[in-house]
Length: 423
Image 1 (cartoon, rainbow, N blue to C red):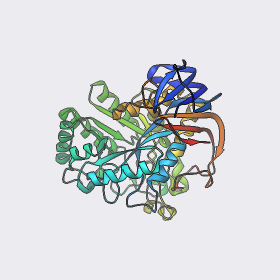
Image 2 (image 1 turned 180 degrees about the vertical axis):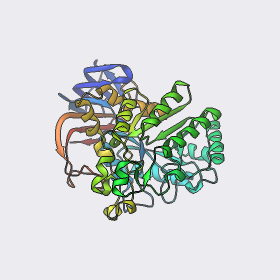
Image 3 (image 1 turned 45 degrees about the vertical axis):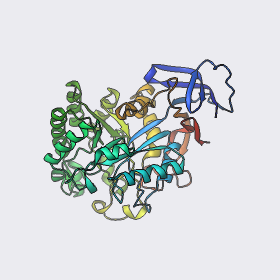
Image 4 (image 1 turned 90 degrees about the vertical axis):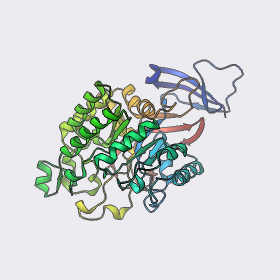
C-alpha cells in the first residue's frame, strides 16, 4: 500500500532531522521525504498535524511468555500491546518452556509472531542448553533459524569458564551476547536494594556489588575474547561509570536501562506493593539520576524490561512474589515526562528507544532514511489518558501505574509499511 503521512513533525536523530515534513511510503519502505515521488498515488493518507512522526521503537528486553506460560501472556497479546506503544520490533528473551535453545522453538515463535501480525518479534536464543548454565547451545543453528542474539537473561547462572567459552563461540559466529549483569551468589535471596529501606522493612537486600562484580568480570572477558556483549537492565551509578570507561577503551560492550528505573526508586517499595518488586531492584535516587545521565550521554539505551504476570503472581508476601512489571505501554509516557521536565531532549528519547537499539542489533530500522523499512510510529504528545483495564492491552496488569494519568499516546504504528495500529 502507498501511504502518505502529511504535516507531521518528523524526528529522526539518525539523520539529524527535526522538522515538519511529508513522508511517502511504497512497497514497505520509505520512498521519499518532503518531495512527492513521480507517479506516486497515496492509497492511504494520514494527517499527522500537531503530531510527531518517529522511527518505530525497538525493545531490547521483553518476556513474551509463549510458549509455556500462556496463562501470563501470549505473543499475540504482547505484540499487540507493543505496537500500541510505538514498538515495531520486540526482542524476546529465551525463558520459555521449552527454552528457546533449538531452531524449532525459534521457528515456532517467529510463526506465532507472523500469525499475530503486529510487531516484529526478534528471538534471543539461549546461550546454554535449557538456560542451565552448563552446556553451550548450538548458537550457529540458532542464528540460522532467525535468532538475532544469544542470551542467558533473565538468569545469570553461568560460571566463568562456561561464559568465557560461550563468548569465544559467539565471537566466531559474530553473534551478539545479551546478559543480565548479576552475581547470583552475592544476590542470594535478596528482593530489594540493600540500604536503609531494606533494613527498615526487614527485607533481604541486593547490594550494588551483585551488579558491579558481574560487570567487572564481563568487561574483562569481552576485552579478551573480542565478543560483542550487551548488558540488559543496568540499575546503578557505579555500573554506568564502569560501562563508560569500557566504551572509552573501545571494548564492544553496550547496555540498556529499563524505563521505570529512570523514575522509581527504593522509596517506592515502602508500601510493600508487590508491583514494585522488580529485578534488578529499584535503587537509590542517586542511582536513578546516574542512569538518566547515562541515557543523555548515549552510554545506555532504554528498554521496557517487560515482564507480564497473572494476578496470582503478585498476591503473596513481597519476597515470595514474582519480580517484574508489565511495562511496554508505559515506556513512552514515562520518557515523554522526562522530555517535559527538560531532563531529556526529544532527539535523545528517539535515539535511546529506536536508533540506539537498532544499531546494537545491526538492524536497518531506527531511522527514517529513504529506502529503510517503513517502521514508523506517530505520537500525539499532549494527549492524556488514564491507565485502566479497559485501555490496557497486555495480558499482565502488574503495573504500579494502574490508575495513573499519563501524557503522550501513539496514534498510528506502521510495520514494514503496513498499518498495524491506528486509533
